[in-house]
Image 1 (tube, one colour):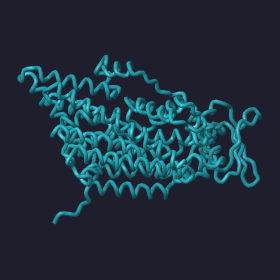
Image 2: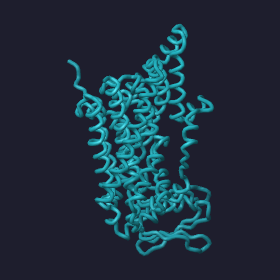
Image 3: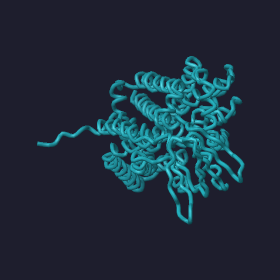
Image 4: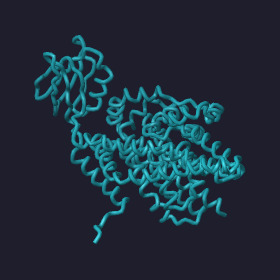
Amino acid sequence: MSKFKFPLHIQIILGLIIGTIFGVLFSVDSNKIEIVYQSKGKNIHKVISNWEEISFFELNEELAKFNDKDQIAIIKFFKKNNKKNLVLNVLKNENYDLYENIKDIKKLPTIATHIKPIGSLFIRLLSFLAIPLVVASLIVGASSLGDIKKLGRIGSKTFGLYVATTAIAITIGLVAANLIRPGERLDSETKNRLLSTFEDESADKAIQTLDIDIVDFFLNIVPKNPIDALASGNMLQIVFFAVIFGITLTYLDKKHSEPVIIFFEGVSQTMIKMVDIFMKIAPIGVFALIAATIADFGFEILETLIWYCLTVVIALLIQTTIVYGSIVKIFSKLSLKRFFSGLRNAHAIAFSTSSSAATLPLTFDCVENNLGVKKQISGFVLPLGATINMDGTALYQGVAAIFIAQVYGLDLNITEQLTIIFTAVLASIGTAPVPGVGIIMLVLILNAVHIPAQGIALILGVDRILDMLRTITNVTGDAAVAVAINGMEEK
């Protein structure tokens, strides 16, 4: 009698739940920091807890002072000024302790943060599959179409749907933020604490702006060196190279083209098999990722920005269920139950990795095997979507821009809000599908409508957690368009 075994998606969900509980139980204590300082040639590790006040001095001059709620700000200040000859003065129980020759100041790690490398390994395993899978699938898919006019038709429909859904997503975000008005619900004390805590990080992000030039964007799609594009992971250039390669195969004699097509079909199947193998450790990888994230960030910051987080979540839910559900119903015969249940493995990986690129191999598997999309369609639509279709990210940027404007008491008119839509659509095209890049895109949008860029400090604390949620929307959008294009081509 065979042993009962939970289906993979149930195992992944259990990994998420248990990882969340584990992260809460072994969360990083916000009232403790570990100081590493040198004494008599040796590094001494000292744990400080429940301090009342911590001050930094240099040459008897006070540089900064922090209270018992400023753990993150203390660590960030030290990292920015660690080249200086700092002296740390700790006030606790009316006693002062001085520490010199400080080498490091950090959070006190827990078992939950120690297991993060297991999750990072899982992300790397999935990520290294993405590019060879994309190349092989696109070459086989483009060569099987056999007609450049058909490819052009599919390409124009795909690009049009992606741009349309991105514009809709930003609009939903703007409407939600204008109705709920989360920025007006943030008290001044919380605002000042967030700004001071993430001031340095927001300044660094503000420097990393994205330049958008339409002509250069289209020129840069064509790679000077395909090998360099593959090595650097430039997805748009990889897509261009693979599509041109696949189309060219259709012009060759079969004796020359068939061995090449068979080879890349073998590569594609091998990559898909690797996905199956790596997914066996998915529950463990997801558990480690979620446990580390929850332990490190905790839920306190969510409580502080609860209205902002709720606005983003509500808007994401509308985009994911109503907008994508409508696209699936209008352009295909697929039931919504089958569509959303068929993506559950991809959703779980998207949530835990916060990366559309790392999730791409799973998206391929779900879309082709669970949703019945043809390989030549998914091989073209999904890689393109992972590069230019960032609906969840764009929506979040719309909410964030309005939220920051409301906190600063700025009233954006309709022209400025339309500028946000236009800028966010352009910024989402070609942006790398990796965690955290949405913040850099947001700086560009804030500058476009003259909102203080340092305002991103208000939302940096919850960016990682919301990034997990918006990646689900990004992946669902790619799948919905793939299903729609497949349905249109079958008619």
